[in-house]
Amino acid sequence: MILYAFRRLMIAIPTLFIVITVAFFMMRAAPGGPFDQERVLPPEIERNIKAAYDLDKPLVEQYVIYLGKILRGDFGPSIKIRDFTVAELIMAGAPASIQLGLSAIVLALVFGVGLGTYAALHQNTKTDFAVMGVAMVGIAVPNFVMAPLLSLIFGVYLSLLPTAGWGGGDLKYKILPIIALALPQVAYIARLTRGSMVEVLHSNYIRTARAKGLRERLVVIRHAIRGALLPVVSYLGPATAAVMTGSVVIESIFGAPGIGTYFVKAALNRDYPLVMGVVIVYAVLIIFLNFLVDMVYGLLDPKLKTQ
Image (cartoon, rainbow, N blue to C red; front, side, top):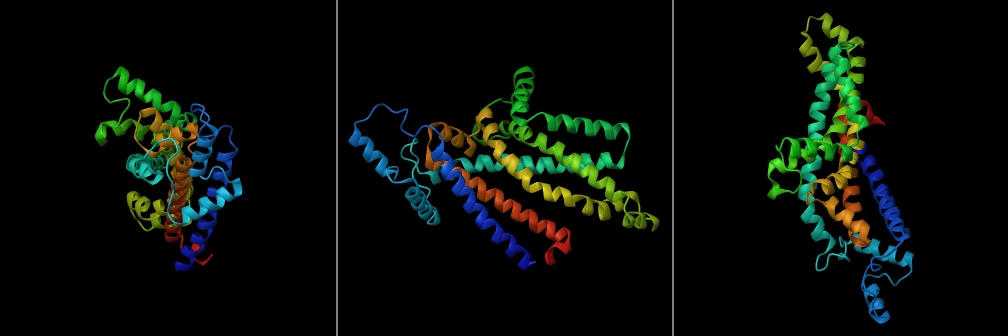
């Protein structure tokens, strides 16, 4: 297991390096610059400002300097949000983003696995068709469309929940963003669980368990669910990535003070250090969660430890 984990870790390090490199050069290749919207400055002042952020150097040299700072844990100062470093802004927004993202993943996993298992146990019945039909709608409608719809229904028409803001972290302000993030993943996980569970329920070892006289509930919980969860665990990595990147839009729609809000503003204002800092944080989080998924998959399927 240790060797298996070491191999996965060795894959993660170059992946992070590639993400940083691609993001750095893509940001610089985009039209415009961080000072294009500022009032016209005297040439000497503009040169001094660019020198302070190393923007007066050749692009490759900027890249090398930035990598050196990253290795020391220095994300640099924000260009547009004065008197704040990128690390301070990320630390301020991280709690909200983590709460929304992890809550959405847990909600999607619980309801997705539950609905998928229930549909598989009632295969080809009206219940099965209804669950899968709703799941298809959830897949077809993206979360940035679902978010305003949820706000309209539960915030405007029914006046049950606030449509924007954070309210000091009060639960009622988190419900709509979490649901908007979780709904597409609930649909994907439900369909994936249903297909996997149907296959497992028709396998030989399940027939053997039933032949021994075990009750159906024990057959499902003790034997079927473990095999059915393997594809779901594999999907958790991409699902987490989808939720984390999707939170950028959702946080902007609901006005949550997360990292996504800073990312959108920084991208529009060409705040290079802040954009890069957010990209690196998201990349590290996603790579780490994918690493955990690999470890869980290895525990569920011991054959992988020898590969």
